[in-house]
Length: 331
Image (cartoon, rainbow, N blue to C red):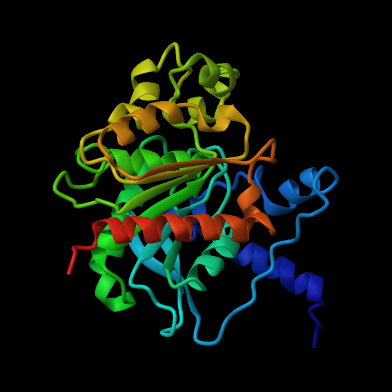
């Protein structure tokens, strides 16, 4: 009997299946742009900031993490969210959505795990979603995805144990920009799958996310590469050729009477929170809670690492506690 060698058998299989078209799905076609990673940020900053620590999660008794919960499916593309739930002993009935950054083009939900875990230990139910990035789908697809997530999070409030009216949205870098954009535009049909969707949030937390693309400072950075900039690749053109979209994508352009309480945390580099003074003027004129905190020349993406992640978690917790006390009716 002739023996078929392992290599020969592999060749035989290859020949048998050559030309056989396997069904492709939307999941198979997701492009990977791996230009923004935790290790990249760690090694970029460890020399100048030796105090930072590699992100490591430790858990308190009773905490749970539910990975890859399906929150949306469209044309075969499935979108997932991880749920960091607090123990019953510390549960406070509030929730936070954490949107990862990456210049609207890269990054993933795992980047927010450290901060999510810290907030869960402070009593919050925390959601870390994936959403479609610019390499996969153009503006405003990712925003629509995140608004659909807000609807899903509100609808599942009873299941996960929080008040649907006590859901805040937060993010870092481009994720912070998107959090502010969604929070400020929640009263408009823009960025929604259904104009009647309720996407109201209790608060916005923006960590180093640009708030106004139209200013001289913002344009000097965000439009430096024109159509090849992060914003340009997202909206489909440089500021000069896609001005209306750059304006529409500016959170300050959507400030309204019902704009939510807002906390802005800055690395100290003004380019990343350009527009915050306009937000401050708008909100304080309406007695809406607002807080701006700035480090002094800290590196961008500080929230990825200790000791800053714990500091950020404490600031978010303190701000949301104040918002909750301001909105609780007197007994």
